[in-house]
Image (cartoon, rainbow, N blue to C red; front, top):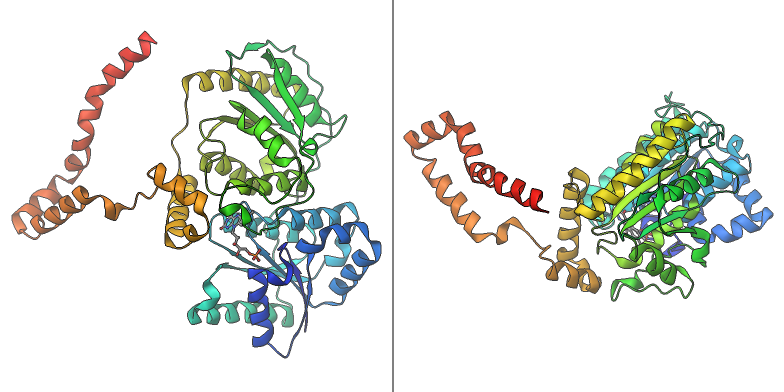
Length: 465
Ligand SMILES: Cc1cc2nc3c(=O)[nH]c(=O)nc-3n(C[C@H](O)[C@H](O)[C@H](O)COP(=O)(O)O)c2cc1C
């Protein structure tokens, strides 16, 4: 069979993910693999018609398409995102329709599931038959047990193609939203109380997003900095070279770093306004997000209020919502709100007004919502990965993790370890065990009682403020 591999890594032949493809190529010599280095050659693919046509012709001739890509910032790299956008804008879905597809990623398993869900949704939209996914840790190929699973994954994919396995669509098609937001209610300008408000956007002239940005800007009294992300003058997407790892500086000598410092770093309240293209923010936004990787695993939005304006059917895009909300949380910021252009204009006006008020209020109070699973789990992944090996090269991350006590392994809490050991020994005495089991709920709330007693002190302090 002919397998067309669409490789999303900007590193081309030096891609980690591509080594997994090469492994499969050796393991299945009876099948032919051809690789399109979409991530590396996106500029050429976009500019040269014959390259684009050749690529499509190879997809057309193939029996199956394997999306092989690294996970970049919870999704696929911006370059692959751009390629997927081009399929839509150049009406090339027909070429992909009916083809069997599967996705193979490498990552450190931080939001790999959202990258796969995105690709799955895109395949559904293109009319492809999505037959399965394989998410590998970037070093998994070294393990024989994983190699066996990889072979099984690919065998299953080949069988799906061979037996023309029926595949159901998993992600319902998206509703088309017509551009119709015209504000109805005049904004009541909110005093920003010295907080710096920045709105970054990718709005097209005359779009709903542009109108939302304008209306939100008017909801804040005082100066609001509004900038189009194209003004960051990026020369390209993140190359995945990781040369930023030592000192958190990017090798690109373009406008991005200055733009980042001027707007993102300076903001107390940061609003990111994005247009949905296919199933995520535009490739331009994705490129901006990928380029922020120069700051490694140091939380870039720490302490800020962050909000989103979305032009597109966010209510039908659970994966996009998950990425947007988790990004804020893992960067140690607070999500002040999300406003989309889905409801009626009056509701959008009210939501924008409420967003302005809430963001200023929360910025003043310094509220950062406690993290939930994505950030708690993410922290443990990064902590273990950085400590476990990455720190040899990701020096800036290592420094930050040390300085901020982020190497918080439970094994380093000696008091707790002694307590656990003592309790564990005591539990081997039958009478103690009986007593503890009987009073388990009481033991669980006992350490919290002291905190409840201090709540009155906190309330008094709040009143005095
Ligand atoms: C810009 C950038 C963003 C990344 N984002 C993620 C991420 O969100 N989750 C994750 O698990 N790994 C992430 N990684 C790690 C890569 O997924 C991993 O190193 C992958 O194996 C690289 O594959 P490649 O060599 O094929 O490009 C990121 C790496 C880079 C350079």
